[in-house]
Image (cartoon, rainbow, N blue to C red; front, top):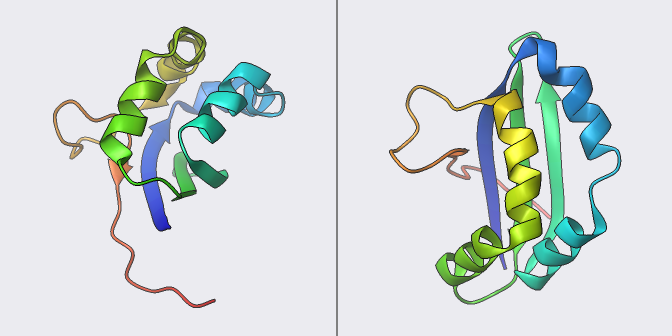
Length: 109
């Protein structure tokens, strides 16, 4: 199992809509997350900085392949098309990335 964290900005005027959408994530999107070996997925909001922090646990063996499978899913693409305009990538994100990855520096069970 691999723990993963990412950060992304959100437009202040989009916070209420983002919360509304995530209060009722489409079942097909939740199924695809599980199908791609992702468990214990949470997104946290930090205001007033308007940052989203995502945490999940990856239980597969090929994260790149599972990420590609998720990205190829039409329902997930539709979900992202609705949510991405609400978000703001960090200025330092790598080209081609949306969420900025983070380094785990501490963990205790």
